[in-house]
Amino acid sequence: KNFSTKNVTVLQANNGMSNPTYVLWGEDGCKVILRKKPEGKLLPGAHQVEREYRILKALGATSIPCPKVYAFSDDKSILGQSFYVMEFVEGRVLEDDSLKAFSPEERRELYSHMTKILAELHSLDFRALGLEKHGKHGNYAKRQLKTWGRQFRLGIPTIEKFQCDSDLASEILGYNQRCEELIKVLEEQSDVFSDETAIAHGDYRLWNLIFQPT
Image 1 (tube, rainbow, N blue to C red):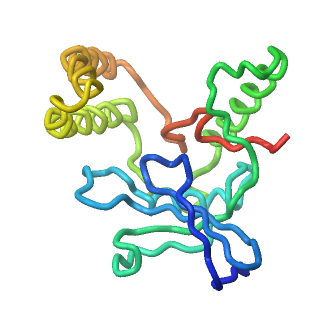
Image 2 (image 1 turned 135 degrees about the vertical axis):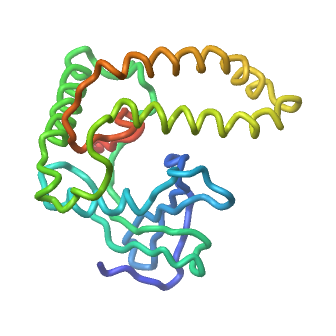
């Protein structure tokens, strides 16, 4: 990738809240995206940019629309955390879930296309893509509940610290018991689920997709 390193401009993107995301461009105007792990102590299993890089690189050889990835580094002496660099893709991020500016026909077409891409993603042979060791096989529902239940509980002490300074913190804590009840019910229901191991997108929604500019 030809990228001018003279007079580089760096701006933080308004999306990518889990992992800090930046857009960079040099004198030639060529843009790239950099994503890195956030600073500080991280929750176990969270912010795994190395997994993002690995699967994006593998998907580059498929029909799934995704940005090209250029480089990954786990050298913390550079930016303080692991990071990777990928292609900048022009397009729109639709932040209004109501899609008020779209007609019913346009919404139907949009969501049909989203569903088609997700189905194609699930149907990929992850073994042929070299992703057999990318994650665990089987018991997907149980593993998701274990991970998110753990993340939820580990985050409570931090939220409690801000309870006196933030109404939002108090509101979140108000849902604590209801969340615990939900986790218990879902754990019981997960015993009846069977699954087939496939590639899945952990947060497939409008905000995490880029649509054509027009």
